[in-house]
Length: 578
Image (cartoon, rainbow, N blue to C red; front, side):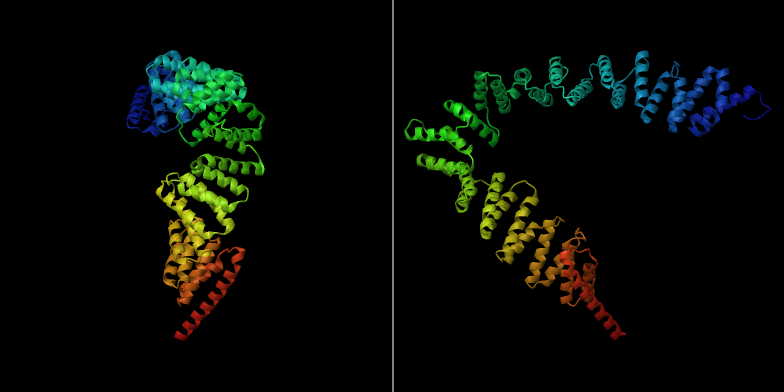
């Protein structure tokens, strides 16, 4: 190619052939080097088609070598060439994407769309949308809407992707309106989108609609929201929450009969849990006691309770569940000792008509709570014990709640034997349940603690402390394992104590902790007693070097002295043997 004897055309032909060979052999660096600016300029003047082909090859090589910006410069020059348009557009899109130049990428797709070549695929629309989402300018939403309409027109069958994009657009607009606290527009936008069929009235959109109407205190709008929901999902419009919300909204509008209608419908809904049952009971009380409504509104709780007792005593009113619930509700609205005495008096009153109802779990809990508040701790224990005995194991939360109430009472009276009994119940219930093991281990730990420190039942304590240790490095597990080792030592089982302490030392124990010092001090002491001087020295030195808390400085001082004594002793042994 550089032979001066050859003519210019021959040299150029040779070089062109060489460049093609470089391209076919993927020798991109050599190809790029050959196609220098001067050479390309001369080719452009003499042969435009060859120049375009050389640009195509160089652009491809620049893509191959990840020189994205340089590639874009070449590829833009042949973008309008019919022969190279499709390839150049594809490579330009790759370059924009690699450079994360989302603005140019959206422009590229806009140009392709306008010229209708090459034909855009679903994958192209997906990338176009992705790029448009990355642009944070004020036209982002409008841009996405335009792309959505074009995508929908080109691929109406691509319902899944189109639905996702439409949800994104709607969500983005709602997010804007919500951040502006423009609740009126939030409500209007959701209703418009639902009515046009652009979005479905799912849980998210409906919750946002309710939130907006509540913020506006637009009770007719809230009822309208539920009317809209009934058209799309009658089941969701007839849940307990939905009916109570509609009843409250109607009441605030002064539509008393409509409010009562919704409350009556709420009583027909099957309760899903205890909370639902409680709310329905409150509604039932509210509806059944319309004669008391004025007093309830005025907070005349003493009048209500006296009237119920008087009318029941005079056989003018039956003390059924509804009337008793109202009586109990009235007593609960009072304050101080009047409230708690009122609760106990209400159950005493009930006992004269139906003692069995005062012995239910709920009744016992109510009475235990009131008795404890009045300082009748012994009486409260009896109520809570009976409630705990009646509670089935499957009701784990209630068992633990009652254990918690009794715990406070037993700790107050220092009744540690009874504490252990209720903790064993909690442990048993948790072991049967699918709840995390650390919960049952906590109760095992508490049982072991009280049996050891308060009841002096070390053999039993050891068993429970071992159950509380899952082999991990939580403070509870580490403490439990350490106590078991100490109990082994106290039981004159030094071998077992050493084995347990060595295993414990292998766990993740912070060198700055009290436990670290105690573990190694105990090991040092046990090895010292066994006259295993080197092992004792090792552990005493670990104690001496640790960053011990202030309260354990005496341990460190003792360990230093012991280490010094053992070290001197070992040196004297070595001297005598020498």
